Length: 216
Image (cartoon, rainbow, N blue to C red; front, side, top):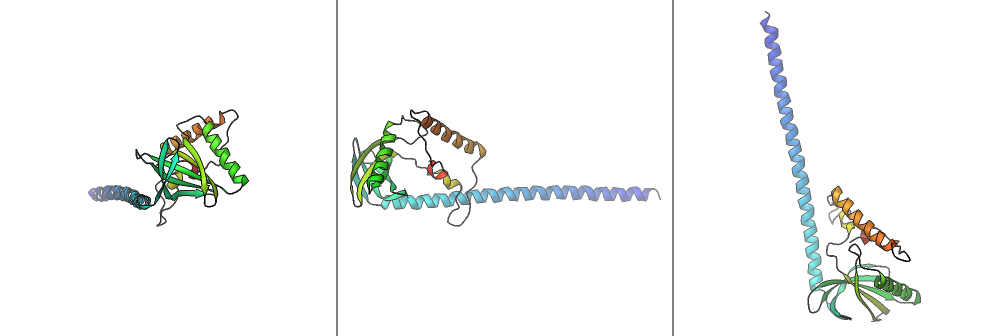
């Protein structure tokens, strides 16, 4: 009679051990499934980004160009703008001889006020000492455009776009994977270095429009 309770407890313990083992296996399975899902989502986001970049490259390759004779930099500027805002447009350009890529900022000077703003930006870019965290200007020129005078700045080309791409959903509405914390802090530090360089000038220079869309 005394053996029956011990046998019952043994059976119960065995069942409990099996249940715990099965639960552990299920937990590992769920964790593996979650990891696989994250990897799949990341790869899908990368594929979408590559498709968008490929489409952009195709549009850029087939766009018409015009020769802009910057002093020392004869460049072929794409007709289609990479970005625009206010009275300014940014175009991709290629050195006519070496093939080196540049960006051209084209500012419309339709009246005295916009002409003064364009001239002030050009003068500032010319006077600002070079810094690795500030896009450098290599040359400038101006010309008569369809809607008035145009001031053109030849700038370094940053091929990876702006930081806003890490926050905006793609065409399907899916958000990109977040940047790892070390990369986020590194980007923030580089922005701080660029701003500190501007503030160190005499007189200090204020950016006044810091946002992800303006960080290349």
